[in-house]
Length: 331
Ligand code: COA
Image (tube, rainbow, N blue to C red; front, side, top):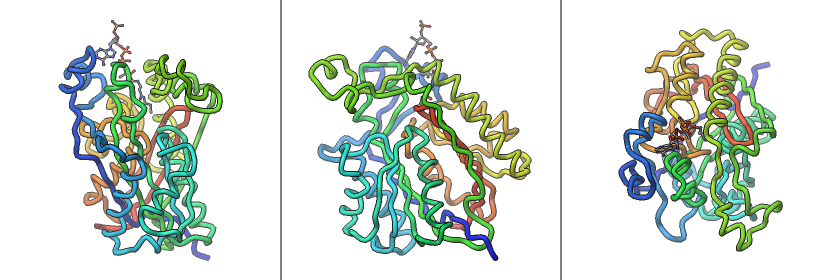
């Protein structure tokens, strides 16, 4: 019997118009363009400025882009998974808000949070519904309005993050293309190094938590950096090895965009030259759940049917993982 795989058959994306450059940040905190570029690779990021607009609105724009490119309607979706650490509100799930704004109540949906690894986890979860044969069209969206939880008085974190949304459509494929393998990991021992200290059930919002700025991203950058470099490289190398892929067999590395130095190290361990590494960190910074689909969106025209892609990620939690995808279409 032919194996049914979940294939990525469409990509959509959206970034807000407003640009926050390194020069703009120089006016907010004690930093400079040269330091940010050399330590992170980031030149600018996009910020969702419009009042009343949230993570779901960017997701809606990305999904509309995907549907129009594929000639589909919102009712054609069976399941929508929103991957995000900045949902519009804690409940109801923002997936419901997205489908409502798209004008449909046909798909069911839910939110999935695994910090910067959310999208890769979501892709793996979505693929299960396709492989099981119970769903024909699953949309996996990564959308984050990081500007809502970033402290623009903290130079350690505010330089890193940006806003954006990207999504993919998963459909069944019988031509040996699609999601071939995945390694997903998590280790809660890392939780203390990258987190939002207040706002949840442990420390509900109060005047004290607001005064202590505990609703913003807290990060011990050096520890996260060390963890990320070692582990993203490790899972990326391991997924190549267990699928007998040499560096020549891999056409593209699609890495989480957190820091160019972490990406360069991962590519080096995989033996991949720079031209095989997809990168847009310079323009968008770290958009958390949106980095991987935004890369696929930006580079879609260069991806050819049959190309071997390695998706790789890491994030708070700690969470990390890699996925081997054989690309399924020419656009
Ligand atoms: N501008 C200028 N100087 C800065 C700065 C900024 N924005 N932020 C920190 N510095 C200073 C520090 O205060 C320190 O000064 P000191 O030596 O006088 O104490 C110096 O630069 C070096 O700081 P350090 O924290 O060691 O820098 P780094 O090389 O580790 O880079 C990060 C900092 C945050 C860029 C880096 O640690 C990182 O990318 N970590 C991982 C972050 C990440 O990927 N997070 C997302 C996970 S999904």
